[in-house]
Length: 187
Image (cartoon, rainbow, N blue to C red; front, side, top):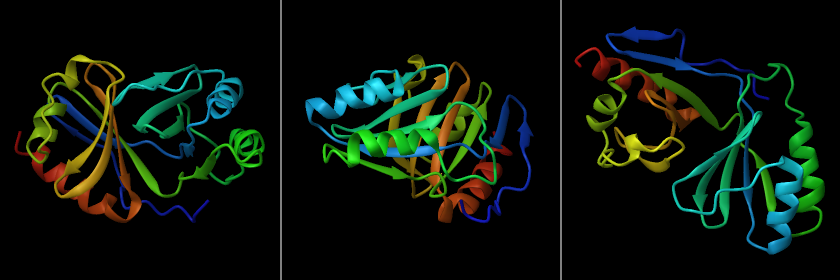
């Protein structure tokens, strides 16, 4: 794990909107398309990967987001130990997938910052800097999309009503955080 120095120093609360970084959370990128890949992943994770575009599946401990027909991001639903970057799940997936040459596993924990937005004004904030049409998206719990927010690539996961997780690459997180706080203060 990187020496974690977050550019996000504090949670922000606005009228009907809360913005906070959730860390540390394990994040893995997995890729594959063979039948053996799916069966090994399902056995290891004890959950089925979403195969429909822009959807997700959730278990007690993990969430899996569809990114492309052969790519998913898996992240832990719980906070992990800060000083540890050795994940048992990554090792199991590596042994069952990568070593058998049926797919690939990459640890992207330090690559992405996870920001949680809660409140009734989430989609107002997102729509002010994003070309994506959230009309149908906000009605579907578990929906996900990859889009641009204030000229920055993001992954958005609609967790529950009035709660989303937003994933942004670490190098852009401070800029996006500043923009979100500026835009939220004007809602």
